[in-house]
Length: 188
Length: 441
Image (cartoon, rainbow over all chains, first blue to last red; front, top):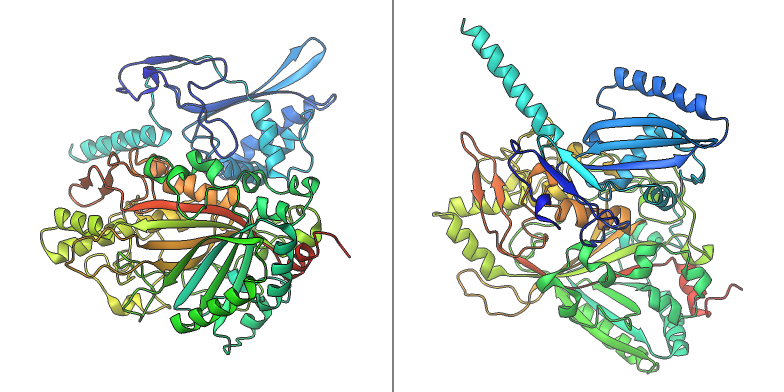
C-alpha cells in the first residue's frame, strides 16, 4: 500500500490515487479483495441499471428512508456511516442508479450486518429494482454480496480535508465542544 | 422440531468427559473408508440419547469430514459444488484472512492438518482416561480390518487439574457462556439471551434471520448437518506468567492484569460484576456469573476493557446482529499442565477446540476476522484479541482506568495456532448415505 494510506495528522489534508483494481496489494477478505481505507475513509460506489419503469418507485423511496430515519435516527448506526448519496442518471435511453456510501468500517467485514440493516430499513426494496439483482437475496446472502461486489466501481482518487477521521471521533469532538461551551456558560 | 434421532449429539449436549482422543484420518482406499464408516455408525452419539438424559454412556463418538473426505467417499462434484465456498476451500486456504500468518501459518501446522489428504476426524469423548484407553483399544482392533483408512495423526486430551471445573492451561475457567438452542427445553442462564433458532447451528431449520437457507445437495447428505471449525492452539504458559510478573508487582496486581486481558477473573467471576477483587462464589453461580451487559453496565470498559477476550468474542448488547454470530464451542486441553513456579519446559500444551455453526463465513470466520484480529475493533486502532489474536509483539492492550488509562505495548503472543480444519458434521442418515457410496437407495 502506498505511504499515502498511512494515517496522518488530521490537520494535514491528504489525497490518495488508487490503482485500477481498487487496491494496492491483493488482500483477501471473507468475500473478496479488501479495499483500502483512504483519507476519505472506507466507502463504495455501486452503479447499476434500473429495471424499466421503476424510476418513480425508486425516487419515492427517498421519502420513505427520510421518514424512517426521522422516526428512528439510529437505524443505520451499525454501518458507521458518514454520508450516503443516492443518484439517478441517464446513459443513452437507460436510467442508472448510483449508491455512494462513505463509512468507517471495511465493507467486507460487516457485509452481513449491512444486508440485515438493508432488509430492516427496506433499502432492499430499491435494490430489487436493479437489473440482475438476485431476487432470492433473502435466503441467498452470497448472491447479494456478489451483486454488490460486481457493481462496485472503485475510486481512482480520494481526498480528505481532515483525513482518516472517523464519524465517532467527529461526534466525540463536537460533544466535547458542546460540553465545554455548557461549562463556560455555567461559569458566567 | 429438531430431528434428535438424526442429528449427531456433538453440538446438542455436553456430556461430562474428562478425556478425549481426536483421530485425523485419510481414506487411501474409498471402499475401506466406506466400510469403516458403515461399521462405526451405530457407535456415533445421537441427539436423542443425550436429550433424554441417558447418563449410562461413558464414551461418545463423533465423525465429521472435510470436502476432500466427502469426495473420497464418493460424493460427486456437482453435489460438492453446492457446499459453501469457504468449506470447499478449507481452513488452510483461508489462512491469510483468518490471521494464520507468521508462526501460525499452515506451513507450520502439525498432524497433517493442512494436508489435502485430511479426510475425516473421529472424536472420542470419554468419562475418564481409563474409558478412553478402553475405547481406543476397541477401535484400533476394529480399524485394523481397514488398511486403506490411514491415521494421519492423533491428539489425546485430558482435563487440566484441579478438576473441580473446566479451565485452560493459563488457569482461566472455561465454558462460562454458551448459547442454548430453541426446542431443546433448556432455559438459558440469566444474561445468556433467549434460546436461538436451530438454523443457526443445524442445516434445514429456520434461522435467526427468519429464513431457511437452501440446503447443499443432495438433501439427504446435508439436512441435520453442521459445520465445524477446528483449532489447535498452543498456550505458551511460561511466557504468559512472565508477562504477568512484568506487568504486576504483587500477586494481586498480576491477577488483575490477567483478569483485564480476559474480562473475567481466572476463577470465572466477570469483571463487570466484580470489578476490583475476585469473587469465586459469584464465579461458580450460574444464576449470576453471566448476568451482565456492556452497553449500560460498562460502556467505557472501566471494568472489562473493550479489547479483552470476552468482550470481543461476545460483545453482547454492543454489537448488531449478535444472534447471527453465535457459535457452540466444544473441546478441551491437551498436553501436561505446567506447575506454578516452574520454568516453561518447551512441551506443547494448549486447547484443541471446535466451533460449531451453520455458516463458517458468517459465524466462525466473522469472529476470527473481525472480533479477534481487526486492529480497529471498537476503534482501538492497534489491538487484537490478547489470547487468540495473531500477535508478533507489535500490538497493544488498553486498560481503561480513571483518571488515566493503562496501555500495555508490545503484547507477546500467548498462543500459536498449530493446526486447524473445516469439517462437515453430517446427520446419521447422511452417514449411512456416505457409507453406501453416496448413492440414495
